[in-house]
Image 1 (cartoon, helix red, strand yellow):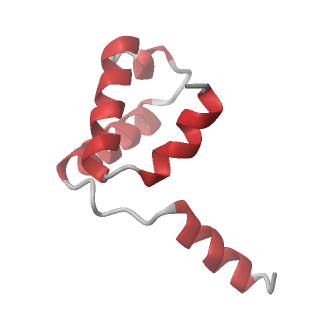
Image 2: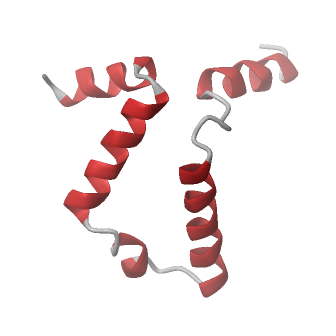
Length: 77
């Protein structure tokens, strides 16, 4: 399966399946990626807190398609 096919398939997966994929990617990359970023302490903490909030409640998200549709409606497009 190509990278393009994988990326196209991701939105069709269940939340639990996407979380499993995310966990595996973090395992492969190591969770230290955030420590290597050039971020202020406040930015780093904000990212960590939002990741943790998502892990606690992965269903509390708005799909990109919904966000995009609302933005396009606001812009009259």
